[in-house]
Image 1 (cartoon, one colour):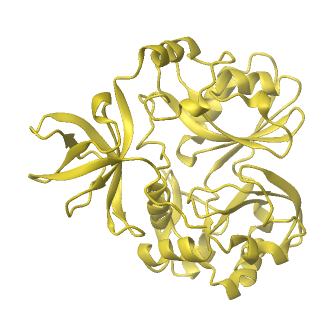
Image 2 (image 1 turned 60 degrees about the horizontal axis):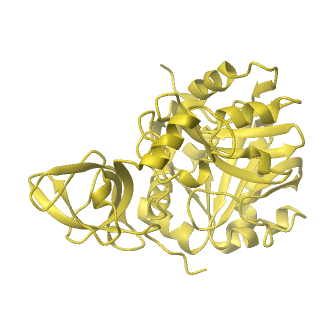
Length: 364
């Protein structure tokens, strides 16, 4: 299958990005080094082109009803300008995808979904659209720039009259940005470093990207690839779909009970409620390596006797902490912070310890 290209594919190649296939798209994985790019975002500001993400508009009198039925969080709490993290539960107790729900206006919402799941999610939501909500897939019309880091507000403020420094986390504003009208500027991100996500029409993508780079130059802005995006999100303990959450992981097992609201009816709500009442048999935990070694996805997690108790779902050497960290599912009795675990790295059992997330605690 031919790889899709984001609008600024050629720009990233010209910037010297190493391009790799990711979620069906040709994407920049790094420009300099993952380590350098990671520290740029933690200490200053970087810009990710994440235009591969999917966006669906849901509108009309039946919009909220549809969203309530297909998502686990309570979207009735949203008012215009607010954003919510949520999941699409499936009928088997797993997760179709995790997503953001934007309340654009009364009876108008935008769902932001993972690139690898655009078609799957579109079909899933449409399957439940039995009452006539208006749905539109605008994924191929928009570019999305994530400008992340402690200096993000300063770097972008000259491009808009929207007060960025005082924008509350998980809210957004719509306004002129870099000369383009009606741009969604949201105080969201996947790094834990603070910052904004900017949604622009593809035809304006180049000029907006160039203006972001120019405005951020004095603050040390750099383009950042998917490699650093992964280490940044992992330091915060954020789930990655396909690794830490899948069609077979329950939101309750994954620690997403906080976005699973039983005050309303939604797909598989009764079974998930029963699971909550009975308790789960396994849990997603964060762990830090106590010995030198890097945990990798699918490595076995064992107890002191070498008995398998779980599996690593994401792992890396944390650039900020200088030690191996990971996420993985373990039997519930091994999930308390402070519990000793062992990660099977090749033929060795390396000691690790369950810790409370996030691994990295920003000082700002």
